[in-house]
Image 1 (cartoon, rainbow over the protein chains, first blue to last red):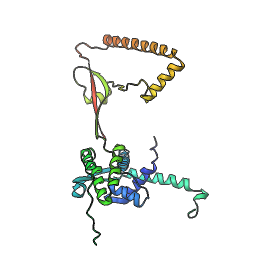
Image 2: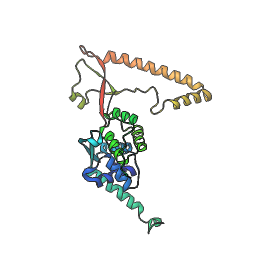
Image 3: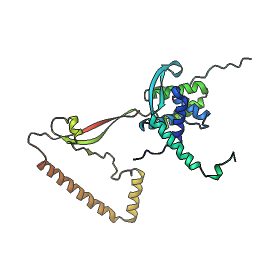
Image 4: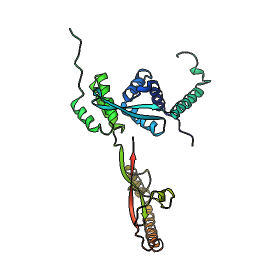
Length: 110
Length: 166
């Protein structure tokens, strides 16, 4: 069975996680989405999406050390797996294919 | 005049709720506290806390629920028996609804519609239930006569499955 296509939020969170590298954890991913992606997302929704991506094998997580500024609570770091990178590329290819030969999408801002 | 402001503390009630939920998703609870330190907004804190609860991000990570009924002789089944499919698993429907995915208000509406439009369907339903019960009793009698081996104490157990939901 072919893997299902990523939703736009899953795709954006995968990209934000890749952009953050070794510092990808919930609040930083949400911040990256807001500052770079221009999309404000609840932390709960970020975690729900990351849990789903992890169950699909597209990301994996590891627990860091507790820190005082977080009330002594540990961070959960996320990394995109090779399957996640492939899935993101497939989604990008799908978008690019749809983009091609659409006159309205050529040129600058409308 | 100094523009330095004392950092805000999270709302007391919200912090208490968060500390109670923290054991269900420690990383998210820590992220909300860290985000509050950056944003310094109680509105942001409440929005994130309520949003996390509503999106189910604080749901319990381990659910224990019965999913299968299994019959086996007095000794517990070995893992190899499951692997070799020598033990047949039967699914157990725990829903009160006879129709998958239909319950609650949908059932109430269906009941009202049937009563109003075609009351005779209730008679057919009652007959169907009667036939179903008769078939069930017949199967129990058949199994008790043909499937019990001497010395085997048939026991029905409910296996519990632990689902680790990260």
